[in-house]
Image (cartoon, rainbow, N blue to C red; front, side):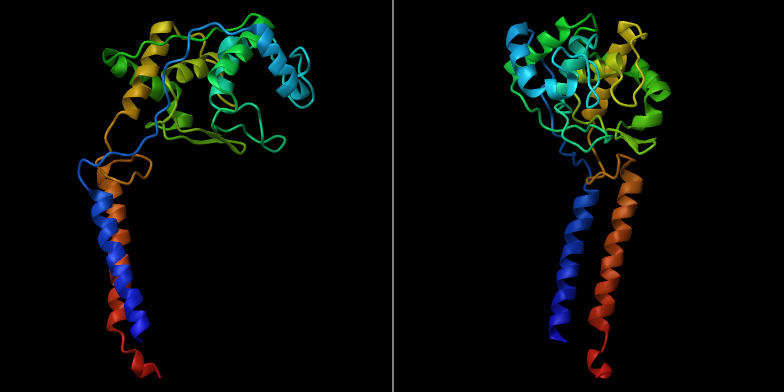
Length: 257
């Protein structure tokens, strides 16, 4: 069976590539980054209203009062509109009742600023925060994150199940402003943490930024559980492939004829 032997050799070559790549010391995970700065230029509420009537009113109502298809936007503030638009959760494109998930923004930066200005004009709400990311705040941010955020987002902010079919997203691409906005508005199943003092919110933001910047010594990450268990999993997979190759190559296929 020459063809089977060729397949086996191909598997062996794949295992030789997988194992070193998965446990290469010092390898860094390719974490996509999104710009952490927001334009501080004020948007034009009138221009935002025109876009709102064309793209948002069918679900949220002509004056943001809400409909059966979408909630009221009165009082969500600039932070709520900015978060939903910049994370691509809005406009919503999923099935009715489905969870809004992160995707590329549907609008460019000027249009988002205009929409945010219009939504902010509908009623008083939280403004866009300006968090301070500081290395000195990481230890306290870790304690706050473990106590308040890790039950849903996981200790390494890689996300997890919330219950009822909802998921807490990974925070690996969330900007500092978006993390702070989420604490102020409580999107989806997330509770609102607006009662936290500014310094504590900044500490949580600093800890999330710290997690995003960490190297991944295990190579291919399995939820950032650490290089030892990740390396062990890679070796088990690789050795299993090698065992299959040995069995295929060493089998006397002629005897079975």
